[in-house]
Amino acid sequence: MDDLGIVIVNWNTRDLLRVCLQTVYASAGDFRYRVVVVDNASSDGSAAMVAAEFPQAHLIASSENLGYPKGNNVGLRALGYHDAQVDDDAPRYALLLNPDTEVETRSLVDMVRFMDARPEVGAAGPKLVLPDGSLDKACRRGFPTPRVSLYHYLGLAKLFPRSKTFGRYNMTFIDEDVETEVDSVVGAYMQVRREAIAQVGLLDETFFMYGEDLDWAFRIKSRGWKIIYHPAVTVKHVKRAASRQSQRAQMEFWRAMLIFYRKHYRSTTPWWLHSLVMAGLLIKGGRRLWQEVRQPALPGVSS
Image 1 (cartoon, helix red, strand yellow):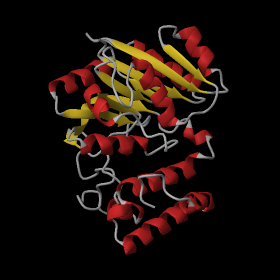
Image 2 (cartoon, one colour):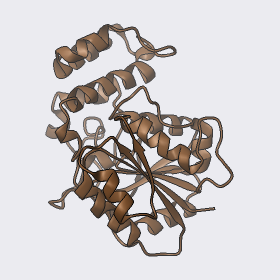
Image 3 (cartoon, one colour):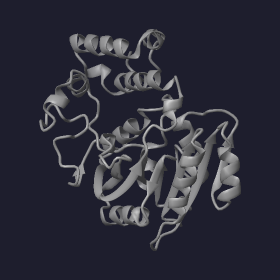
């Protein structure tokens, strides 16, 4: 059995993907891993590059842009993870890795060893740093509850970053070099234990991009697992390299927040706060989100 199964979903980031794979295959340490690259119908020759330069990777070239969660699920299934079961030969950990990341030589093995030493941890992520060396704040997050989101988008998190109340969205009240339990790590580097996947299943394909990692973390935590930010390991993240090209990206972010809110918080949110949440989503998401708001919620999700 392999220790780590790595899924990289790519859309038109060929050159960054090349560097990402170079760093992955330069990894050192006593561990076994497999790599699955799911290319979401890129037009920049990404799939051909992977086939030519990284034949050891399992390439799945989709004929359409499946989105992030569905693309990752395709890769996870190729590794032996499924919604109802996990194959006997599926790796001990699954890693969602963005193509615009660069791992250090021992990043992968150190994350595997960390989770080996902490059997209560269902998912973990490293310290992600941007090209300028600053922290990618998304790598350690609190769940966007209505109140947490309200404080964040009113600017209170920026005004009071050290406040445990106002700074929970990006956990800014905790030093970036301190290991801590968080609500979620980010899908750019999200390592999940196979037993947790066996319990909660795969990513929710209702999302297209954004939010699916938060939702996965929510479901993992709800089964009693811990999620840990582990800054002893550092990974570089270019950040939103693919989504910058997509006009759809901003609307999808707010659509993801709508789905997450309806799925996990609507049923327990008082009417006055619900009204504020919906007004805020409409203001931020614009006219393109209006049709989504008017649609009935999916089965099992509060409207």
